[in-house]
Length: 236
Image: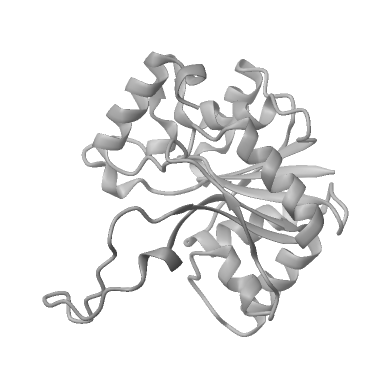
């Protein structure tokens, strides 16, 4: 079976003067995170969804799940003080309803333009490789500065990719990676693939999309609204 783990526990501090985290902002009549969850709700290969959110929003998220008929949502759980803790909390909830060999797609709630094609590619690749990361090739030259003032080096752009989500894993593998990090007191790892790499496991790449961007700033929000107004069918 295939499950989506939606991360909606961020503070959205870079959004500016918003009175609520970005994932809860209304976008054309529904919260941003609902747009994201609907992409997994409508996908034939997704069997269930677990949402990790701010503890103070749990009841509201449950109301939205009923309001927007998100029937695949199996649990809504509280996040933690870091992304790592939030993912782990979601995995523990998922363990109650899933098997070790099931696939979990870990996805940011603030990436609402996730396409059906990316979801399918993640599932197909994860069945074969156990761990996959959604990426797009870097199109701009990347500059490295060690002192934040002067240029230190320019890596070979042909070897560079920008990471997106979903990051998808067999449940037993990503749980093992998180539990090892927890037992070794390794905090605040912001990338689940990095935890899997620490086990000595390979992570394979799945092609993402420039439309699968993360809503981080007010400008991102304006771009999202423009794309949605055009219609997903025209941009995805």
